[in-house]
Figure 1 (cartoon, rainbow, N blue to C red):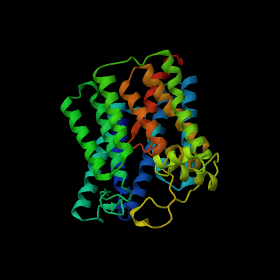
Figure 2: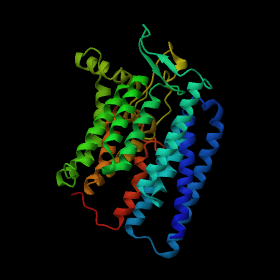
Figure 3: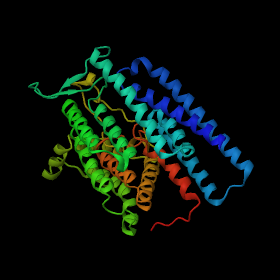
Length: 391
């Protein structure tokens, strides 16, 4: 028990530190702290590798690996290799840190992971926003309309939607932690925060998505409607992520501005379809990914050529590669299935939110403020000792 507690303490400490600096590194402080953040990334990778090795060696000294444990070890190797290839292809070092944090997450519980994620995202976010308002870093807004009547505040981040989707996951995480214990006053406060962030950042999707999440949370959890442990749900729910991913790619590939339907959908999704279509033409999907040069996600690039892949599914397929994408889709599908199997409505709502958001935004592997992938090994560990059945 002491050994497990030690591993858990090391893991949660490294995860908290990494999450804290990850949120700051995404801001306009990046030019100052990025070299330090790279050093932290290396330390986290080495620390997680050490943690994984001592756990495996200690376990082997006690007993031999069973077939299920051997299969889990093979899966771990596949995850590490896939994330390493994605890191090298995209030149994003934090992808490797994500992999190492994922494979060691079973040393702790889902609740503790979400708590660490919540606080280590909230504190640095408030620091950056405060510095922006005090003028310590560049001005905190960009103009949205030519008339100047709409202003989107970026609060110290280079892209005005950054704050809104971090707040979105903070609010979802808060609902996840409170579950049925949440009070109506807390629901009202969360609704107020959601509305205010929408007014300040002008980002519609996070606003409407959280409204949907809040309604589902009230109906499924607070009022305890619907039992998710249904054989039909357990069969069809795991198909949601692969179908969503393939459908998003199909829409982007078949987009044509000559068709009024596709033109309307493109306007509705803020030109994301046309940009994704251009991305497919320039960067055809590859098994192991590729580096994609994007421009226009910054307040510094106003008036210059814009090319940015917002969709998480599209960026993953084109940049991280088909194998990486299939692996992440499998992990989310497994969590989705587990949420139905255990009638875990909070997990179900979070997975559904990630599925919806990933069609439009690329946050599905950002485990610092969206720690769902960290739940995979905790869930897998629980299922190891049980006979697997899809229904």
